[in-house]
Image 1 (tube, one colour):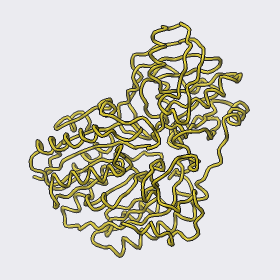
Image 2: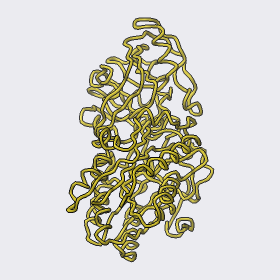
Image 3: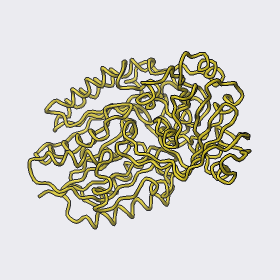
Image 4: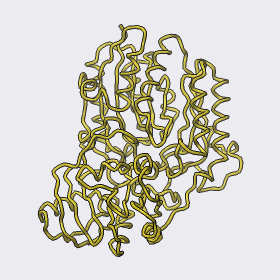
Length: 502
């Protein structure tokens, strides 16, 4: 009987977020070792898909839980967090005993404080622990930053095919199927083509043009018998790393010429649509003007530059300042990560006066604390829920203690820890219904459309400062390769020398 180890180490990094990701951020989402990986997280995201996929194998197979570590998007991992990763991997792989293969759930865009290629580092460490011949198949987010070290150290990689991300589980099933094919004799060969471009998430939906037909053809390509996996990786743009940009990764069964042909072909399809992926944004005053003029409710304003889904701090004050200076019939609803403000509200008590400087403490580069005065509403010992949809599948979310504060016509939900900024559940978990408000703020550039889209009266994309801004010229890139569109104008992408570097 084959024994297949299952590992998840997953976080998406925004290197412009000054708050490092630490061990506690992973512990907040639950650490699983050994059998716990299967019993406690066997229905969560890609792990659930791995297990489901293994059940379809014709031969007997035993899933072996090794390690599960996940944190929400944020700043780079601290050095001692990386040391903890390695110690846990070494210990748990040792305890797992004989393994015939590994399935590993990664994001693909995690950084350490001094390590720009965390997934490459992790795969290299894992490869060193299990040896050069063990089949290792990794799943990735389609915003992965792909590196040569990742390609060398994994036997094959499989990425999401949807954004908003609705196929975590399905991607796990696909990864398990690739591993099965390797055991059946497939010889995976990866073909990687880079594109010198980055784009924001606002118009990256794979469900509508211009990307929908390309991703449909990508899925069709993966169904060819010579192809093990096919991915277009639109990358996490908020990494200051060499060779940042879109990439196409095709893994074939020992057909490198076919892989290169397909990768080149999909890259050539992506390059001409780049202008269609650039959004026209509205500054905060114009956002409020349009929202107030909207017929019906809610008008949903996306604060993508502060998106917790993109690793932002979740404590921008720009839209809040504008809203509390306006009369908003029907009221506005927004959320902010600020543990100090939560503590102040709990100290004041329900119904008490609230006078405190909120926000601008985590992302203190693009925001400064804003002094507000209001009244404490409800207090909550836990703002938590089970996420299924964009960003997670059966994923437990715990934003810590919470407080609802009323400031003028704005209902402000304060939470201690970041979580998904794209789901109505971030408000509903404390009894706030977004449909009851004229204006609702989300902390997401695109993923929120999956759940807010069906009932939003209007969707407005704001142009506020933040570490996840799609105005890339506002971000302090230092290490990226140039030229890189849209920071630079590029004619023929194939003539950019750095995209051919290993």
